[in-house]
Image 1 (cartoon, rainbow, N blue to C red):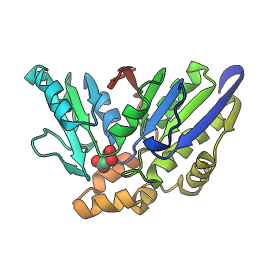
Image 2: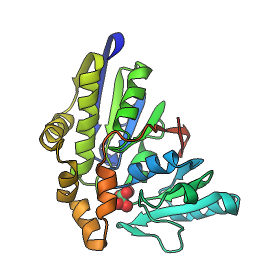
Image 3: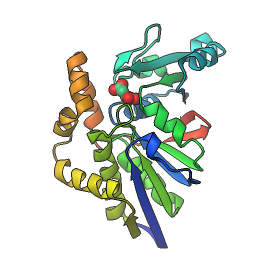
Image 4: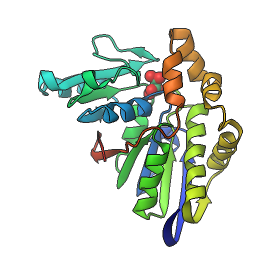
Length: 250
Ligand code: MLT
């Protein structure tokens, strides 16, 4: 249990980037369970130097070309499929130590990188999947901040079950482990908490029930990706934005 005096923690959750109001943000946590923030977390665990996220593919390619060829990888997907000409798609299983060690990953995905760009002005910006839920939650607790915004990635502007599950998982951890008042400020997060309470013992089933889980299943054999993305609290990595659009392990 972490003691943080009389601090009150206010938690808000938005489903997708376009829902976020124009406000100053202290802490923002971006979630894309399937699969961008899971892949980011595993890449950093496996020794990637950094991940730079882009919405625009031309800009990504131009920026990557300026980097030492031995030290760069272009990584991304559209519609769940690897982008033609890129080194990697968006599988957390592809970012092995042999592939990513000491490299900068230039990354663009359909939804996850958009959410990361949307809140890039926050004082502290973290990327979270289910595997590093506890690590990110402990980091948040240590910062003693009042206002935390959790942002999902959804799918092309609409709700996703798996991001809401993880938002609920984070809120649940904070409520249980933070010795201060934790306020749930919107209905989106109340619903996410209820979702977590319903699925917490069968996370993989929830991911397979989600539309994007089904989409991946129709695209090929993504069983191991889904399993990897469903693992809870197995990574001690906190991906943090260190300059706009650039994420490193803290
Ligand atoms: C996204 O950004 O929408 C996802 O990470 C898609 C995926 O590759 O599964």
